[in-house]
Amino acid sequence: LSRKEGLSVNSSQFTLSGEPFRIIGGSLHYFRVPKAYWKDRMLKMKACGINTLTTYVPWSLHQPERGVFHFHKQLDLEAYLNLAADVGLWVILRPGPYVCSELDLGGLPSWLLRDENMKLRTTYPGFTDAVNTFYDKLVPKMVPLQFKKGGPIIAVQLENEYGSYAVDNNYMDFVKQALLSRGISELLLTSDNHEGLKDGGVNGALRTINLQKLKNEDMMLLHFLQPKKPVMVMEYWTGWYDGWGDLHHVFPPEDMVAVVREILRQGMSINLYMFHGGTNFGFTSGAVESPSYKPIITSYDYDAPLTEDGDYTPKYHLLRDLFSRYHSEKLPEMPVIRWKEGYEAAIMYQHLSLWDSLPFLEKPFKSQTPVNMENLPVNNGNGQLYGYTLYETMISSGGSLKSGNSIRDRAIVFVDKSFIGVFQFKTEELAVPDGKGERTLSLLVENCGRVHYGKTLDLQRKGLIRDIFLNNKPLRDFTIYSLDLNPAFIDRLYRAPWKALPLAPSFPGFSLGRLFVDGYPSDTYVKLPGWSKGVVFINGQNLGRYWHIGPQQALYLPGPFLNGGINEVLVFEEHEADLKVLFEDSPDLGMTVDIQ
Image (cartoon, helix red, strand yellow):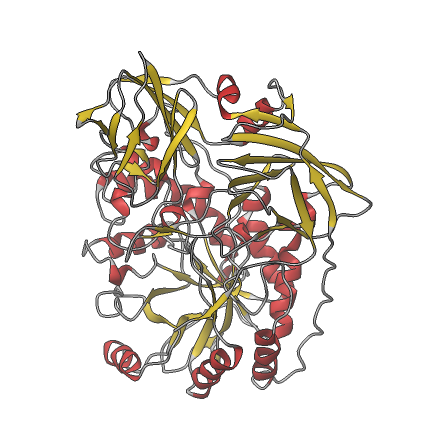
């Protein structure tokens, strides 16, 4: 294979090294799959007849603070792309800067929002300077991995569905130049959904389309905008994501494969989004804003051809059968499936109330008025990224507590540590009971996930973003604790004065138990019947949020996160809890509903 000529679009068919080439791609995200399983998932792609791997690069994870860059372990993108090359997959890289992907703020770092005038996804200098700093670190790592330099990257996508945001005509040009000037020389792409196709695109990049149903008018528009060029469905949605409180979305295998068959019959290229969805570990999941705010669940199973834990599905087998007709050689054997295991329940034997954990947080911040999460003076001046923030102030009477639409996103309210109610996403007021003298009003506010798509990205500040009112008077003099549940805090927490589990433990609070694994650890599923809402940590690693409203009723716990022997199970629960955590051998993504 000569490497002189990369992926080209000089006719209605792609060529690679001058030979006709059809992209049969699949999306697989390194940040959603345990590193130990990267190769397994790639081999399963290859065995299905996939020739190209597509991945986003989430800026927010690679640069959690302005001066801190992570490209190691789970975020070792170079290792991931080299592995893809070893397995025999080409790569389409999608380095944003905005990636959507149902990630918090669409993968943009929340510290950008410390600037009150920030205009994300525009040529606003505060944004472009930050992009340039990130690309100075990222792009030089990618340049040697390009096709013409002997690497696997055959194309690079600019931004993501900018046509449906389209607020700055110079922005896409900026992104293009940011990549070209740093040495990206392979084919450039843009991708847009139906509503953004018209305003998407930029000169010098091939337009592609994202869809689930093949509509004639979309294809005609694409041909009209871009005659005599290869047609690529950049995201063919194999399923869909779920919000908390939804049913679990599924897309019937026959319906899905029928569209794929038609796309291939018409000579187009395709990328399956997702081929394998994986998991939104920790606090990485985003939220939708319309018709109303709804946060995304922890599982990113997506009803994809490979399940969240990497198992085969009917979709996989149907696709393999279809794709095999487009390969001259026999497809590789399918890798064997990993064993899932149920383990003995972890009995929670120690407890720590939220109030007793406060001394182990960073020092609280005092402020006359409420301060949103992103603007708190924590994390080396980068503000609080994720998690919870506790706001406390003194009150001298009861009455009506009004949110003033200032609570993002959900707040549990206490007077003198006694629970009085919850501000859900839509709640506007709570009754504060009368009492004697000065009392402490506490609001534990959770960032349930920043919106990942749409026109409100600039408004995704979390915590208390403005005044809240008691009897129509704005509250003042807050003590603010940042409870981001980060690894350093979880470490310190082990030194706290834990108590043997009381008969009536106080919530919100932390519970501690142990999971014993005999021999080599297998994948398992964490189930929490009798628990309400919170976050699970295994050996200090944040698995993600659980919430009894579902649809998801079990959290995927990959074997590589466990040790043979004793494993620490730490659960932060907001409301009420059973005293044990179950480990079972099968997922539970909830009752299903067909995607319309």
